[in-house]
Each structure stands twice: as C-alpha cells, then as structure tokens.
Image (tube, rainbow, N blue to C red; front, side):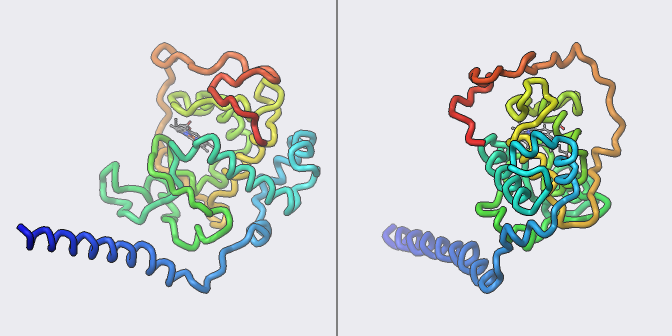
Length: 256
Ligand code: HEC
C-alpha cells in the first residue's frame, strides 16, 4: 500500500509538471519575441462599416466618440468600449470566438466548425489572430447557445445588428437571444447610444482582418415560416425610460 501511495504522489506531481510545460512553458517560449499587435496598429485597418455608422448616426456618433469623423482615435475608443460591453453584457456566455480545425465534411453536427461558420472560405482560427491588444484576455468562450462570432465582420449590415440588438426576433424569429433596449438612447430602437455603436463596431471588426467574408451553412437554409402562436414574443413592450431601472436586472450605473 505504501508503495502505491508513493506512485500516486509521484504520478500526480509528474502530470502536473507535464501540464505546466505543455500548456504554459511551451506556448510562452513559442510566442516570446513576437510583439503583441497594439491598438494603434489595429486602427490602421478600419472596417468601412465604422464610416457608415458615422454617416448614418452623425449626432449619436459625435455624442459617443466626440467627433463626426470615423477617425482612428474614435475607432480605438469604439473597439475597446465594444469589447468591454461584450464582457459586461456576458455575450461570451452564449457565443464563442473560435473556429476549430475539425473536418468540414465529417457529417456530424458536433465536429463541423468550419462548415458551420466558415464554410466556403474554410477560415478556421489561427493563433496569430489572437495575438493583439483586443485579446487580453481572449474571449474564446465555451458555450455555443448562439453562433460563433469570430467571422462576424460583414456577415450582417449595421442596421441588421441594431435591429437584432433591439429585438433579436425581428431578424431571427426563433432566437433565444435577449433584447438589449439599453443600447439605444431614444427608447424606440432608432438611435443607438455609445454602447450600441461600440458593440456594432466590435461585431464588424471581428474577422475583418480577412478580406473574404465567410457565409455560414445556416444562411443557405430556407427560412421556416414563423408561427407566432408557438413562440409568444418575450420582449419588453417598452424600453426603460431615462433613469428607470432596466428590466433585466442591471442595477449598477452603466459605465458607457
Ligand atoms: C442567451 C444567449 C445569448 C446571449 C446572452 C447573447 N446571444 Fe447573440 N445570439 C444568440 C442566439 C441563439 C443567436 C442566433 C439567433 C439570432 O440570430 O438571434 C444569436 C445571434 C447573434 C448574432 C448573429 C450571428 C450570426 O452570425 O448571424 C450576433 C452578432 C450576436 N448574437 C451578438 C451578440 C452580442 C453582441 C451579445 C451581447 C450583447 C449577445 N449576442 C448575447 C444567443 C445569445
């Protein structure tokens, strides 16, 4: 028995050490000497949708970012704010940001990352996509209640995103994604506020480093007819008025 205890202790420490080397030391060694891409560098490639936001919502844009032009400074501000909002609103709870390299033609619903979210372009995720200031910490996520978002750029228009944030069932009839009326400043879903503009910017940035946009296999499926009676709308009828508590329980002062 004594001998077994000894073996278990040694094996336990051994495997711990092995895990430390494989998961910690090796990746660290691999990435040493490769500079992390800074926000300034990221802002040299501004997706055109950011300009569209400035054009379509000039007053809201100015109020949010202090300028009417889609400048690099405004873009950095929007990206960082969007990312913080993504964390604060727990979007990562339902969405991943990683397309794993699994066989696109394996015929199953579990091992088909590429065909689900990057079908035609086969753009699975690469390590270098995450080696930038927007990924500290990274937001890989683990749960996929909703689709993967790392190839979101260009998949939908800004207006689609805003309609979807106001009420996901306006664009996706069966959606279980909650509505986010506090991303809008007018209580009617027409004028996005700083948080709404920033999150759209963030969505349109995810994957914008690829020039090719990746359609998903779901976009090619025919739409089912929507039967209201099965899915009664669960949206708050009215957005919370200015100063009123938000109906989804966020009590704290909104930092954006
Ligand atoms: C309760 C889970 C849940 C949460 C939380 C959630 N989503 Fe979703 N999301 C979904 C589901 C389900 C879909 C697919 C149906 C749809 O389009 O609404 C989706 C779809 C999307 C899409 C469209 C993706 C595509 O490729 O068509 C985007 C963009 C998105 N969500 C962004 C967000 C953002 C940003 C947040 C946080 C503010 C968020 N989601 C929070 C469940 C969620």
